[in-house]
Length: 475
Ligand code: NAI
Image (cartoon, rainbow, N blue to C red; front, side, top):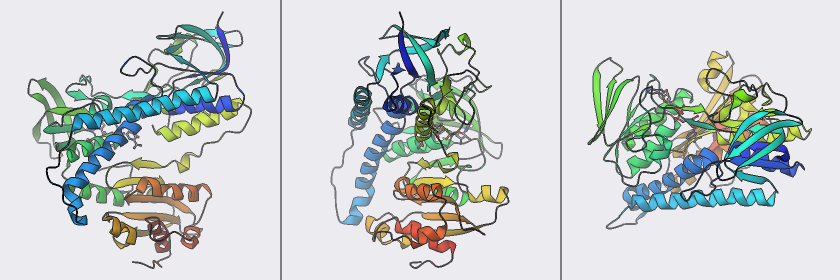
């Protein structure tokens, strides 16, 4: 006899576990199946984000930033440190402890919300009377019957063709977060989000870092004024970034990794490194799902095909997060998970794809929402731009962190905010105000008229809004 549920969520990452909790809050009898194991074989829900993505990378970014501050910037504050030491293995152990707190937090939330958790891999068996039959294999061996199924199986790192990850020398995000000694020379392929975040961590800890990027433009999806500033800052920090390259053969030897590549001028080059991180994007994960057993439709990239409301081609089967179209971001997955749970409960769940914030947790951080200046030009939209540098912000000066700017783009006719782009201290936090403003369809004048605490970095957002109308007060 199979166990019956109103909703079965496959995958316990940010999309899945949040969908499960929301569905349970709405009175549904919910199961969530997740196979991720911790180092002792126990359950580790939270997916890529919690285990090998957002959370551990931020833990290492924080530790390495402390080291960088102590090494290079404490002296500016009149603090001298002698015999400064760094223990990479301890940093990684702390990171593992932070991950475990998050895994345990999710298991606690499941209990609190009466979500039935199964530790194992879920796969479709067949369409059955009253729903879908799902097999769980692994630590838990069960057959479940779900009236509604939410697939939230996430994504996996994309390997270079013909060069699989060995996680010893050729690393994905997983191996990059597990290094316990600092490589002398570190090569990265792909200067996207992971390349820049991981490159920053290991550079701060002493590695000589070279990033090879295929595209001719640095951070092509980012507002180009911000991207140019970012490249300048990162290169000054010591990251070597090569654009417009073509990566050739990758060879592993006793000495490390050898990457053959061609530079933008077409000249053949080689790069010797102790370790190589390949961060060239991710692919949707449907491995072991047995989608074909029920006829669940995938596209040519292997993503589950869904409509704007996350409905698949099968009645009662939904999919959210990295396994479907759209940006591979934890918070996008969460929003979709909540919206699907609400739709299942007969409510009107909604996700506004135009106000999803993007953040790159380098130092300085980069964060944005809405359209870039190049997008507005391409779309033929008449706009006004206002920028304000952190150099002119009192709090940033007091912090000793004055790199970057806030840039606001508003409609030339209506003044509605169309995009905000920030490079600078705490950009990840500052962007929240801008997301809210855009969600409420605020004008730049609205932000300019709101009282912002002094001294705070957020005054730069207000000043950028004032700059749209050419009336900054502090610059
Ligand atoms: P990405 O899509 O951000 O960047 C990949 C980069 O690799 C691109 O610049 C691309 O042009 C380049 N590339 C692709 N193929 C190449 C090749 N053969 N040779 C040289 N360059 C090549 O992907 P990334 O950094 O791997 O991250 C994966 C996903 O994880 C992204 O969707 C990202 O949004 C997400 N993520 C988000 C984070 C955040 O929100 N802070 C942090 C880390 C990852």
